[in-house]
Length: 136
Image 1 (cartoon, rainbow, N blue to C red):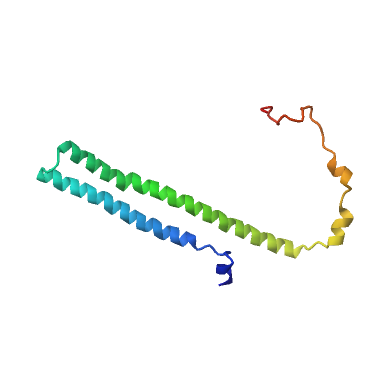
Image 2: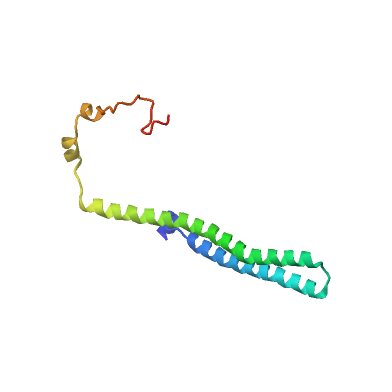
């Protein structure tokens, strides 16, 4: 429960999967419903043939392309939340690795280099305002 309230555990992936399933069912049934409606109207000759064909194509597009686009949107959101889970696992791994090899603060200060050594930078024959590729 502590992971839930500190936002360490992400529950949104379950919601995205559920919403994807509901959207898939809705888009498929809507597309098939439009195709069925247009087919029945064409059979009864209550709409023009050209309009009926366009409506059938639109219904098939909703069922096929709509589901593909819906899948891509949901996968994008899952990708974002999976990146969060991956970063959390890396953080946990880093905590366990650094916990085994503790460094004392006095050891770090004794090995620190003087400030003058770190401030020297090599010059490679470029003006200070140019980038590496020379684009700016």
